[in-house]
Length: 220
Image: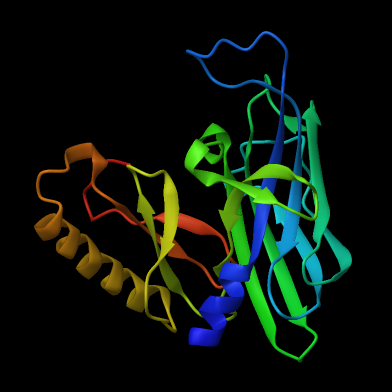
């Protein structure tokens, strides 16, 4: 498990955001284009395959697609997607997109991973990181482990606007929903005063899609 976490820390996605002219600092940062990279800061070369789709069907202009990304050597960065106005950017704002990436390391280790672009929330200053291979700063997005064939839970930090991993693997939707209810009951205790900022619990299906878990009778 320690080796898995180390590999996930050292391989990450980054957004190069090119601002549109005339941005108002008090409003959303509007973009003329945005490039998405995969960065390998680990000890092993790797090859990668991309599966791109829109988990919330929010961007009908972005067709699902699968592509072989080829080899990514250690210490290097690889362009995996480019978003332009009318092809992913809507009114100059980042879309909601899911990227699933299968990684095969040179020592034979295989990992199925995923990350989301979460609209404009992906462009936070605390996510900026310098990438020597590109000699520029990217907005960092960490990869999450995708467990094939299992139902799992994912947390959503509403204050930080980002996902975080939750332990456990489940064989059925009934099992994972029981676990989700227990997680919500735990959040009720530890975040009793959070109100609308209480963390959310999401169910990840075996195919990688997500939905928010709500108690029976809760408004959607």
